[in-house]
Length: 132
Image (cartoon, rainbow, N blue to C red; front, top):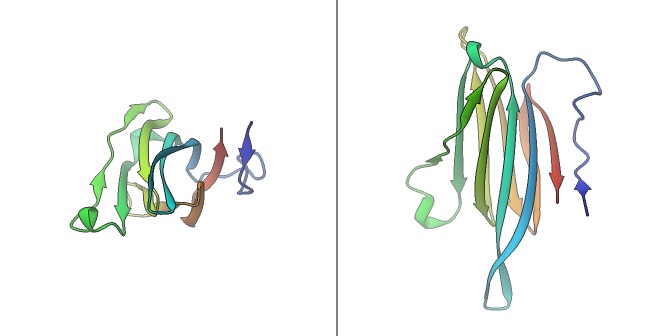
């Protein structure tokens, strides 16, 4: 069963902005005192001119063990952008930042909570989020 979050679609408007498409699954990890703990498994495709920008992906969290510094996410570059696989825990955020050679940047932050992955912030980024 597929669920799509009502975010901006790639086809709604022609744009030079980077496009981020995330497909995710939410998996029960363990039961901890009356609440469930989930792992969000994300397949992430980022479309941008890979030869003209720098891409940074990282996980940020309110969990104390990750407060010290964000975790950088490895990705695979290709001609039109990059792809990666990411695992998030409840209340963690995925940040995608693309910096152009002229110093301008695009940024999106996604938040995992309550079995949903939500776009929390977007700056010059077109996103689609699809749950499987």
